Image (cartoon, rainbow, N blue to C red; front, side, top):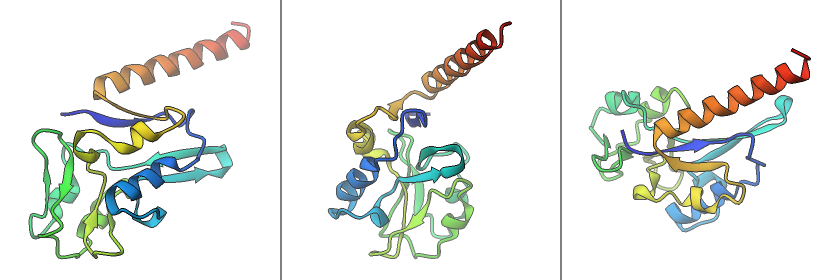
Length: 160
């Protein structure tokens, strides 16, 4: 598997710069509706979480497409939609377990994050480093360290 975009929700402020840059990069227009990344506000938790295609190894969107318009890019590993083949049935939108496949309101075809061909614009534009483009193993190790640090901190604070 290729590199992935990892999200550090602790660093995300909800500025939505990633959405702006994505919409401009992909459509030439500054519109959150045209962005392929969405920032979801979890008000009860006081968090903002960027959500985008995770390029599943067993991608349900690829499996359910009736016209084979969705495939995996062999060099980047990204799940990509061929807009010339897409018939706009939205089966992939229903199949995505993360809600990250959507329909382009202008073209009536499915769209998702395609990793910008291996140089994601959202990652380089994020002013707070909440998005990183890295190997999945590196992402997992960073999360393990972060969670271990939090556990150790809470144990120290509880007097253990």
